Length: 355
Image (tube, rainbow, N blue to C red):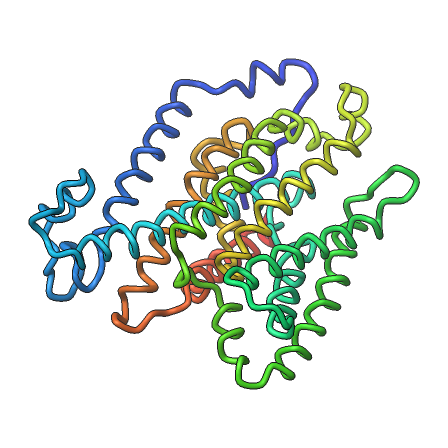
């Protein structure tokens, strides 16, 4: 299993500076992400890289991207710019959010098997989604807003349960997350039972998917995810120091309680927004940090940005596979990520047992 780093107070800055190899890896990942966005936009039943009729040629896609689509049918532009591109960009944002949240959780808990949902974010979000079905108001974004509110409510309850005397013990935070998550899951199950005809829609949302992607959802998700990600990146050095333990971190001048609280807030923000627009997509925040740790090492100053790009790459390809493998039928992307993540998780457990 990819072990968490052990830092030393002396010489830690020299040891954990970004070297030339890491820079090239990050540059390659960014270029791969740009190429993936373009390729995924072309893939589909009517795209040049799809398995269908290939009615939309490479030339048509290029003309649409450079705003010279006059000689092509208006439907081509709608498919590329209004359907596929927003979905790919939303997958990019959600993948970034889940991956950076998972990396942060693994750093906070000093546990390489932690994920973004370990403190009840997914259960709270599911509760918010189920509760939205019973609200009398009619609003276009009622579901994502209620989902986000449920995720934040769960984190607020978990944190306040363990915040005693100005201190927060990580192991109690984990146990509280499990308890609160189980409580919200029970309420969600009851609400699903009471939902009646809307039951199937809610189940499809809980499986995770980006089928509701639009430019409006991309714009709404972009700012909070980018702000939360930048906030986490700002505290990357502090995450390195937290891995030493609370007492050594305090000795090195890090306000452990404050830093952990801020990181939890940013994590809840990015993960809550991601879940609000995509449903429950598991394993992205678990797999990506491990793969990136193999490539760039354990230093969070490098690991966090690498995970951001890696999470986007993983989710874009998973979503592309979900919408094309059985076209025109669409598979919830959460099923694809689980099929990839569950064997990887079993591999980690077996490797951990051998070590």
